[in-house]
Every structure is written in C-alpha cells, then in structure tokens.
Image 1 (cartoon, helix red, strand yellow):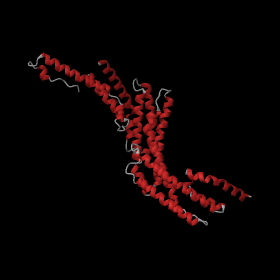
Image 2 (cartoon, chains in turn yellow, red):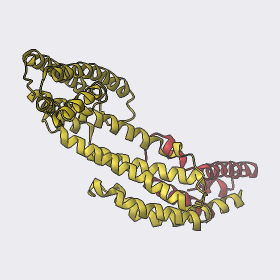
Image 3 (cartoon, rainbow over the protein chains, first blue to last red):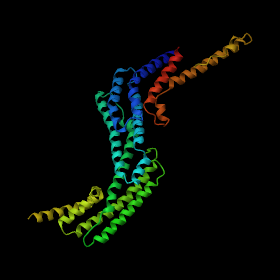
Image 4 (cartoon, chains in turn cyan, orange):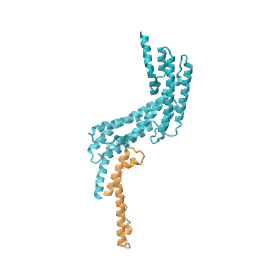
Length: 282
Length: 74
C-alpha cells in the first residue's frame, strides 16, 4: 500500500502541476464579466495546452482524463451561453416584439458553441491519432444544448416570419376573402405562440425533456397553419393576372416563402412565372 | 488528517497491553480505510453527481488529491 500511495501521490502532484497551466484560461472561461461572444478566443489556447499536457505529462494522457476535462469545459461554455441568452429573456424579447434580437443572439450562441467542437477536432487532428475517444460521449451535453438552441431559433424565426402577416393585404377579385383568411391564420398563430409562452419552465434548460413534447406540438400546429397559408398564396397567385402583380404578391410574403411547406407548394408556380416572363419578352 | 489513538489511554499504566494492542490495531484499520478512500478518488465522480461542473473542478480535484496524499506521505 505504501507503494500505491507513493505512485498515486506522484501522479496527483504531476497532474496538478500540468493542469495548473490551464488555470488562467479556465478562470477567463468562467469569468462572468467576459463577453460571451469572445469566448471562442479562449478555445485555441486551451486546446493547445491540453495537447501539450497530453504529449508531455506522464499521467494526464489517457482518454478518461481527457473526457472529463473536455466535458467540463463544455459545461462551462453551456453555462456561459445560458447567461448570455436565458430562456425567460427569450420570451421577454418575443413579448416586446424584439424577436429578431433573440434570433441574432441564438445564432451567436450556436456559433460560439460549435466553434469549441471545431477547436477540439483541429487539435484531435494534431494528436497524431492518439485521441481515440468517442466524440458522442465527449459532446453529449453540448450537442443536446446545440439542438435546443436550434429548436428555439426555429421558434423565433417562425415568429419573425409570421409577423409579416399582420401587414399583408391582398388585392384582386378574391382579395378581400383571402386577406380575411390571412388575418384568421395570423390570429391563430398568435394564439399558438401565446400558448407556448405559457410554459412554466426555462426553455434553455436541457434537463427538462418535456420541452421536446411541447415543441413538437407547437411545430405541428405551425405546419397546419403553413399549409393553409400556402393555399392562400397560391389562390392569390392565380387570382393575379399580371406578372407584376404576381411578383408583388410573392414579394410581400418574403421570408415565409422559405418555409418548406410553402416552398413546395409554390415551386409549381415558378414554371408558370417563367412562361409568363418568356411571353412578355416576345 | 489520520487520527492518532488517544495518547492518554496508550500511555496509561492502567491500560493492559492487550488493550493497547487493540487500540493500535483499530487505528491502523481506520487509517487504511481512509487511505484507500483517498486512493480511490476519481475525477469522474464530480460529473456523475450531476452538477455539471466546470473545468476548475478538475484542477481542484487534483489539488485536493495531491494535498491529501502528500500529507499521508509525511
């Protein structure tokens, strides 16, 4: 046992000595005063030291050690990201019609988190095939956080796009009933969002799995509205008789046209538009 | 951090040698347990507890473990 103590002691002292070189960087990483959108500047120095430690140290060079360290770095990044864009703040931005700002912040969050994975793979490539780790286990938490961010970004983008409906008015012979249908869709959309905002938990908390169900329901409802919207747009399109009017119509739905269901429906109309354009050219 | 057996009991003339031996024996058993517990410590435990610790936890872990083992050694 004395030998065991001696060996462990040498290992622990050695590990601590090497890990201490990371301390200033880890301190910066968890420092709440540091801007979140500069966090990625720390990734390369951190990974550089981790690789150096891996190469130089006698003990801190095994997959289990690296797994713990990387997973803990991921935890720190997630925690910073949640300070930067807390769940309740997203609902507040939506309520105060600043949803676009939430979109931007979520995109930044996704970018900063993804960059850490990039940095890891950059250094993994430099480890000369010695970092034989299953990446899934390493990034399991960061990945599910990223997935959540993508979901919430989908939500906020949807809100930004559907908010366009408030201002659209269609002309033509069927203009009035179509505009009424649009208003109806918009009202239902707002109700769906309001319902979603009633959720009494932090939507950025990945431990809360209930979110997946709630978000699925939200998406199903939105898909139904999208199909109805696609139908209004095609009807409006057919109702227009000039190419100018048709372009104007499509222009007013800009943003919404990128949504897959609407895009599918409108694809058929592209050929019609092209044919009309050809005739105009003659 | 390793508890010493009661000096009074061990030094006392009234304590029979057999009991003294017993006291030392149980001290050694306690020490062995304590030392084994320190040796057993793994950094994974922090992650398993589910508090999502950051990387400074890893530094603290090795600092604590090395302090513990250093003091045992001395």
